[in-house]
Image (cartoon, rainbow, N blue to C red; front, side, top):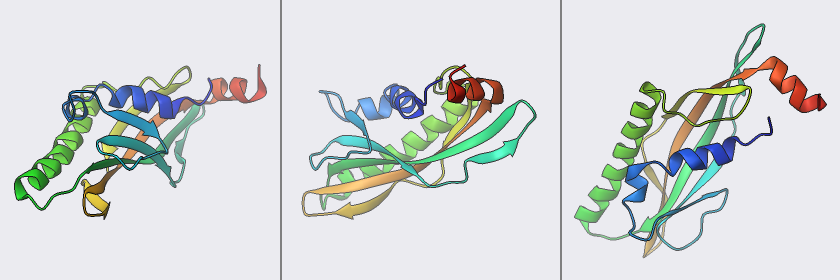
Length: 155
């Protein structure tokens, strides 16, 4: 049960039709690396209290992330409205995926319970030609205590 949660999230995000529609050539999604050219995305872990609730057989855990993107910046209201709508659509997609239990496969001993946006999409930084948008996400999952013990102790 190696910790493959970030890769599982990238795999899950690759199924988002809104990200896919941003470019005919496809959109790169990275872990902890956002380049300077549009259009690309990066998933960054952020601090949170890891254990939400403890049970006899395991724990309900949480991980927070920022999904950042580099997009073109313009003074054109129509384009800025489309970028804003993208983040609204993305948040709705996460909600529907959670409701329909179509969540990331976190591997043996872990089961995703929800993956939701905890903020709206917003501009974090901008220059004259690009901007960095981001949205905050929270993954809540159950982790089996016995499977975790086997992983850590190599049993």
